[in-house]
Image (cartoon, rainbow, N blue to C red; front, side, top):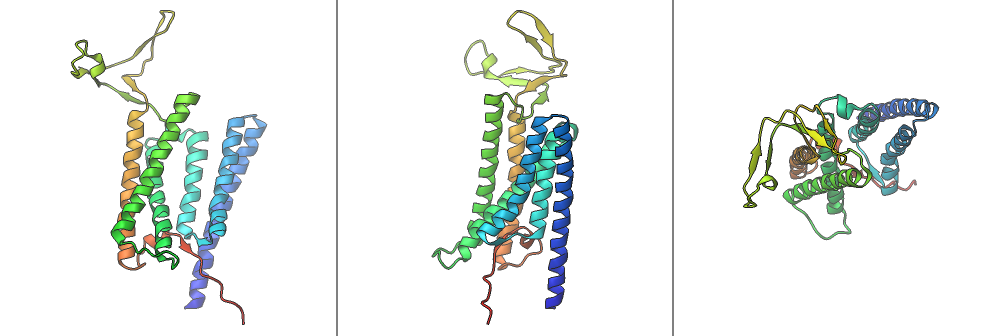
Amino acid sequence: MARERKENRFYKNKTTLTVYLVLRGLIIFILIRAVLRREYQSVFLCSLSLVLMIMPSIISRRLKIVLPDTLEIVILLFIFAAEILGELNSFYVRVPHWDTMLHTINGFLCAAIGFALVDMMNRNDRFTFQLSPLYLAIVSFCFSMTVGVLWEFFEFSGDYFLGMDMQKDTIVNAIHSVNLDPTLTNTVVHIRDIADVIVVHSDGTQQALGLGGYLDIGIIDTMKDLFVNFIGAVVFSFIGYFYVKKKGQGKVAHRFIPKVEAPEKPRE
């Protein structure tokens, strides 16, 4: 039985290593191509991706925790999907719901990480408190949502101060606003069936954008991201609740919850 477990562990580690090497090789290839083309923004994103991909291993060693192979593989794929596919290959624009998928996964992963942090303290003899499964689930959920909100703050800051478009705009066909009320009585004015937007420049020239509707600046994207983050967080919070309730038993939870490394036994 012990030999079988070692073999299973070996194959899992081999799979993780294979995924890491394949993704790393692809990123290095894209990095070299970007250098030759003098695409410095792509060079930066590739370099950032390479750094992020070694962070799980560094954190695992520094904090002396064991990252489940499934969690580590999902993190590696998430980094590649977000930075290389999403940013460099424009999947955020070309592939429908790509951003939504990643934010859902992010909500799930952050809930798992938040749960693990509190669960490890909860099991540590140096801490005197003992938290219930429900409280652990709530903390896990709150941690994930906090990370999601901070990320939206980051996206808004990039758009507002640097003129980026991290909060992707949405085409809508109706506006409902009290700012359009000429009587100033807080009455909502409805404008429906919007087919296009005409921009009037400071010199008086006009430009029809041909959008097929009104350009909503970021708010719908932000709320959608937070909502799917909420879904991911809720899903893992339920998983984590039953994981603690069943005292560490669960086919899904143990694949995503890091654990403290067992201390090495002194050799006799």
